[in-house]
Length: 207
Image 1 (cartoon, helix red, strand yellow):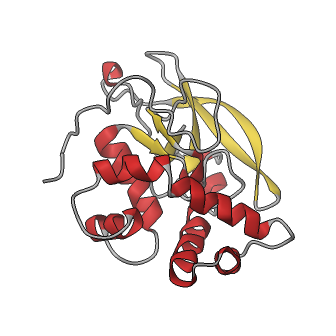
Image 2: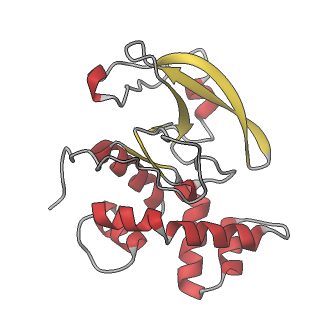
C-alpha cells in the first residue's frame, strides 16, 4: 500500500484514473533508488457504502505491486481518516463511543461498536509504536502528533505522511502500521505487523 500525497477520495478518479498525467509515485524499496511506479491494474473496494476503484501500481525494478490509496482512506476499513480522527477527538472529550460515532457520521446499530474498535485499536499496540517514534511531548499519542505536525484537522493524514517519509511505515488507521506499506503476513485486526526487523533508520530523526 502507498498513500498518494495531495490526492484524496474526492479527486482520486480524476487524478489517478483519468487520461491526464498521474502524480509521480516512487518505489519505497531503497534498492530501487526512487524508481517511478507505473499503472498495473485496478480493483474495487467499498468506501462509504459504495464501490470505489483503486489503482494498483508496479515497480519496473523489483516487480512489486502496491495499492495506491488516497491520502485520506484507511487501509482495510470502509472509513476515512478524518472520520476516525473526529471520532477519537469526541471520545477523548466525552468518554463515550456514541459521541465518537456521531462525530464520525457513523450510523446504524453497529456504529458505536465500530467506533469503539477504532478507539481500542489506536490506543493499543499501534499507539505504542507511534509514541516511540514521535518527538517527546506531553499528552496522549494524538496530542503528541498534533504538537509535532501541526494543530487543526487532518492530523492523521499528516501523521501518515510523516511516518512514511521518515520510517517507510504505512499508517493504515485502525488497521495497523506496515513496513514499506506491505504486510508480511495475512492482515490481523489491530496488528502493527512490523515484522521481525527494527524500524529503518530515520532520514531526519526528530530531536
